[in-house]
Amino acid sequence: MNYNIALLKGDGIGPEIVESAVKVLYKVGAKYGHTFNFTDYLIGGIAIDTVGDGLPKETVDGCLASDSVMLGAVGGPKWDTLPGDKRPEKALLGIRSAMGLYTNLRPAKLYPALKDASPLRTDIVEKGFDIMMVRELTGGIYFGERGRRQGKNGEEAYDTEAYSVMEIERIAKVAFETAMKRDKRVISVDKANVLESSRLWRETVHKVAKDYPEVECTDMLVDNTAMQIVRNPAQFDVVVTSNIFGDILSDEASQITGSIGMLASASLGDTTRGLYEPIHGSAPDIAGQNKANPIATILSAAMMLRYSFSLMEEADCIEEAVNKVLDKGYRTADLAKSGETALSCTEITEKILSEI
Image (cartoon, rainbow, N blue to C red; front, side, top):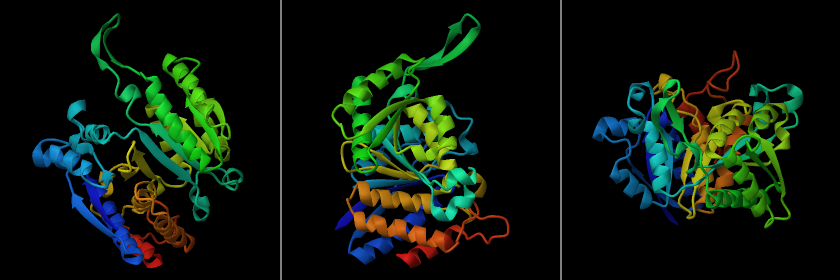
């Protein structure tokens, strides 16, 4: 089979980690008889510097014409002084919207070999955990009405959280379908004791739950969820929540795994075309130094094979290769303990390639 993949390498360490994923996909393709064709497009700060636009039309068209998309990272201090609607991060919202991606899947799994890297107590870590965060991606406060105005205390700024029944229904269905393939448990996270938007969220999720009687559906307030993730992460299977709550909670969940450099993500819509990216940032402080951990991006490539191309065996192959490398004690700088040798981005990539 032939697959055409758009590459959005972006800024900072983006080009380095995406190149690692490309090497892994080439190796998998050679092993299983697939051809992966890659085309580069500009996005983020590099696009602003090159063509004056963080999300050029050519990039949008190229992504829509591809079978799927891989993204590195965008942004950095160089562009922090730009207005909000001109910043590199705006391009992320733009490409997700253009591709019709409303679901963000963020797995947070504790690899046995990395138990010592988790900041949690040993008794908590020993239970293990495997959480799938299902985050709504195109609604809520990030896309609501916003602005500045004169209030009773002078100038004030506002951002509006708003959700429709349709938006909640479709993300809830994704969560329940995902749970059916896992442990059949969904926890819906909201702030229904305060927010009207969360009350509608809760009502709608429970209406959808009636179509999935095999799945246990419970509610949890977002502040309690933040506490429970560090207190007892093993209690979670699938977590479904809004854009802003999912943004925060998925980053928290990533940290208890030992390193944000290990966490992949998939952004999906109603077609098989998705956007796959690591959840960490552009790390401009180590860009170009061959120090970045590419594993999250490599695991994002595995998610692409699984969710966009239904290549289950090939996805398993990548994930098993990563497991083997970690089990053998190989670590990048973000994972290495004091006294351990840290491998470079290219070195850890070569180790993973050798296990495929």
